[in-house]
Figure 1 (cartoon, rainbow, N blue to C red):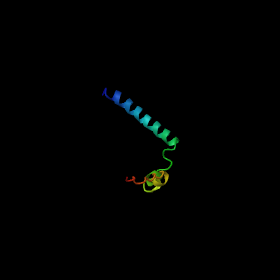
Figure 2: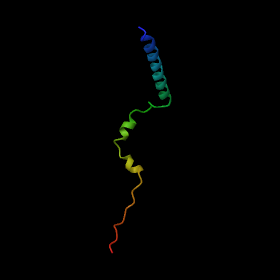
Figure 3: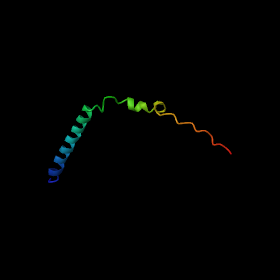
Figure 4: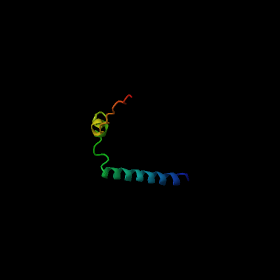
Length: 62
């Protein structure tokens, strides 16, 4: 019975912290677009943003 005096307030505190974290994330826009980040992996946009590697000339033979 005495363990309830420890566990119950701890559970309420953790639930409150989780609710505050959810509200904070919602207000910061974390849940605005859930589909685009998953679809971004399927495109080849990374190659377009990456600068082209310089072409190296073959070594000269003496």
